[in-house]
Image (cartoon, rainbow, N blue to C red; front, side, top):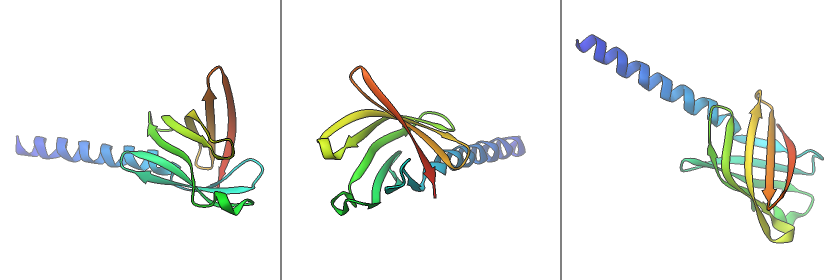
Length: 121
């Protein structure tokens, strides 16, 4: 009986580690479509934030582009906030990973939405 309990606990533990590793593929540095920014995803509690690390406009460096993005599956993320810094606005944000190097981000503001693609460095 103890062997069965230990095996079940080991299986649950390994599944938990696997799930965390898959979602954490979003972590690291990414570049935007026109390659004018480098953005780094970091873990913030149970969510993910994207911080601008390099930009043509140095005043943007260190600011958060995306905050509170939540894992919604193994490759999808939701409930984040996209910060449109130059306009002083925010939009709802979702994201999905395609493979290890492509991240599709969708920002929605009212009835409008826009999708962009970031590439992992």
